[in-house]
Image 1: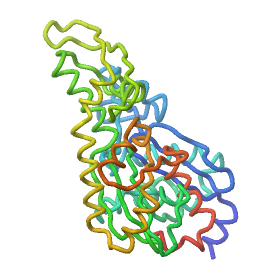
Image 2 (image 1 turned 90 degrees about the vertical axis):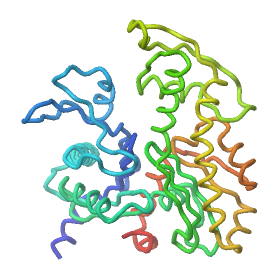
Image 3 (image 1 turned 180 degrees about the horizontal axis):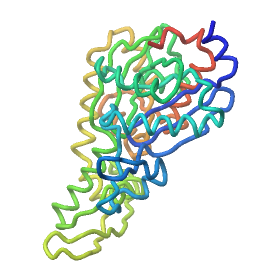
Length: 340
């Protein structure tokens, strides 16, 4: 009864708690927040929060010794519980715009196949942030709902969600994951591949933010893509002084070849374990690409050529998961079977 009364005065919240970004959808208002999953704190025994979100991300790689910019989510799961709790509390209060004593129900997305310990950590962090009830949904399921796939029907749907820390690949039918695989290869690994390529080729060390800019501006994985180039600035590992080099789209494609092959092999693995009747549906309807990685030029072409089924990019790849969690939140009775 008490929870029912609280529900009258609270706004339920849906969260896509990602390795790179956290998005918040408030029931009845839509997506109200999209910020990097980064927290800046002071060093020492009495750690204090300096900044969260966009402001904290600007500090990555630029902080003095007294401040540390942390990404508390790693490979889709909580790496630093205390910092994640602080970050969630900040985002919930910023999105809610109400008295923090009025607790909300929270639906939050998690990678498919994470352990019970990792699931418990997400739940406890959310409860500590001040919500009255926590419901969880697997990210590929939320992404499929957000992409408009018929997840409750007796038809096969395949989604490939390439986020910041994980790539979730799943075949869905009748409101459940028939086959799935979570690969700890995604946006962060793509950035790292670019950093290592530049280091090997030119003896120059670039930062995460520079690698991310390369990925977004000239990142591509298929020969048919337009070949642009850009100038990079980094530290020369031999002389120790700043230096600039030029990197082309062809260089980036070479740098990302191993990462792309891992994603392709994971897709094949899921397809090999898919029942024949659902395979027939997928051959007709194809797979849907969501997440930030879906923007990587030519990835849909590579998956189409390597798997033999159509590959379609979702209308809003970056928003698919949070939109899906929001749809579930708006109609809990209909989608209750997807939650746990």
